[in-house]
Amino acid sequence: MTAAGPVPTPANAPGVRRRLACMLYESVLLFGVIMVVGLLHSTITQQRDALQGSSGLQATVFLALGIYFAGFWSASGQTLAMKTWHIRLQTTTGTLPRWPRAAARYVASWLWFLPALASAHAAGVHSSAGFAVIVAAGMLAYSALAWLRPDRQWPHDVLCGTRLVDTRSTRAAPAQSAA
Image 1 (cartoon, rainbow, N blue to C red):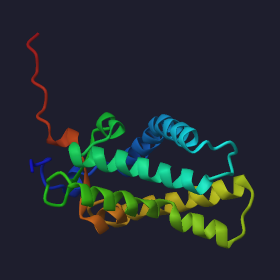
Image 2: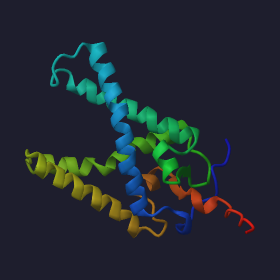
Image 3: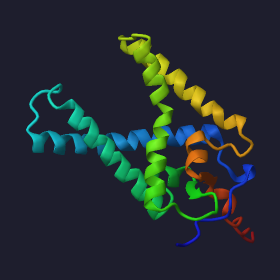
Image 4: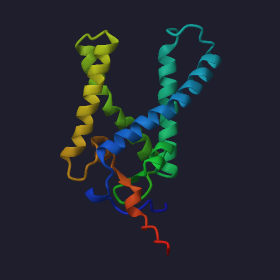
């Protein structure tokens, strides 16, 4: 396995705001992926109603996203959004994660949403506005956990033995051109 870069330190960990911006950009890109997966699923299963077979569609989208993320992370350590924002995923030893670790990180990354979703369900929230507020608050609380760690990594990365690193800090500075 080839090395993905240096072992990360707090100095070369990307900032939390930049990681959140990357996540927002990733969600825009994934909109198209989810639309195609949804179209294929509804065509293959001949789904005629949005509520018919919704659990199967959710499982299909979950698997498709898992393949997307684990595939990119194990191949190059970066999705398209991560390349744009100069962020790379690697193990704590500085290598690219293999498929099982990348898949485990994908599953563990649902910690972003699951506690907030469970809280909204337990509170009996049925309005979309209330639901959005609870999920957004849960996501902000989860992202704040990175500021509590000296290496600025999120809990699912710590759990899976992975790190996000800033690829700009591993590049050589561009040479000055003579005027």
